[in-house]
Image (cartoon, rainbow, N blue to C red; front, top):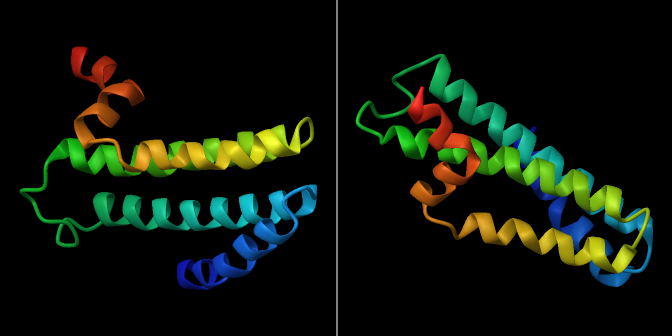
Length: 122
């Protein structure tokens, strides 16, 4: 399912590039991105929670949680971008680029930004 959703990405990106002023192209690209991020987060959660042999036991716990949080943050950003498209289409196109900020952020910073500091205090 994940690979099927990933194979649709060139189509939805092309649609967004060609018709960036149409709300349907923003919806298709956002829905495709949500589908990819959702399926990948389910896979990562499954690997972490059900079988310890799928993930190396020496993997940093910050990396484990940050990876899942990045995916969930992406889903939230895509949902917000789709919602913004009802108000301002051009702004929602730029909002898709916000996901790149979290992609290049180091794991420790991402962990702290996504309520990791609150969990460590408890």
